[in-house]
Image 1 (tube, helix red, strand yellow):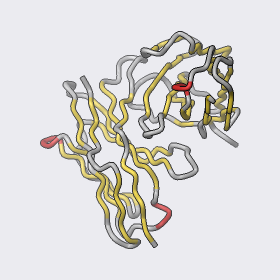
Image 2 (tube, chains in turn purple, brown):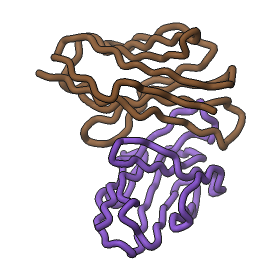
Image 3 (cartoon, one colour):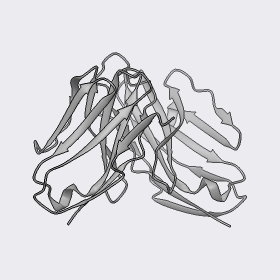
Length: 114
Length: 117
């Protein structure tokens, strides 16, 4: 009964390719997030959606496009992959977008761009 | 602007020793929330605790305890009688206010804890 799941767990691809990472939560939460964790373990928010509506959009290259078909899913599509995109990407969810709520994280997707 | 500093990048202790992970935060808000998350070698992030700015009581959960001191803007985490399974990266985090759905959690850079057998 995985609460927040992501696929794939590992993704290895060439520069210039386009790839997607999928995320699903079965917690009934309204808000979902994408985070990027770099090689130094620094964790930074990229996007958040509340009930399919984009709420937080940090300074992220527009090659990154989140899509939320429904409130249980938040996918991340990345165009024209670059070496610097290599990182672990975490999906998370919380009950609503209010900051006092704990966030539940997925297992992460390790993206390696060659 | 909010900021979280975990000055200890990496700590190694021998099993059964006590260890304290430091966290210092900056915020202009009077209402804010502090968190600790654990990231074991398997990679997932696990929520440990949340504390709001109006509750300075220390918290104990088994071998884990947290010391929140507003006077020094610190929210330190102590593991008593450490075990090898405690080896992980630990993140302290801060969020300001609770009124907007665009509230963000800001994470510190993490402290990597090695418990040596």
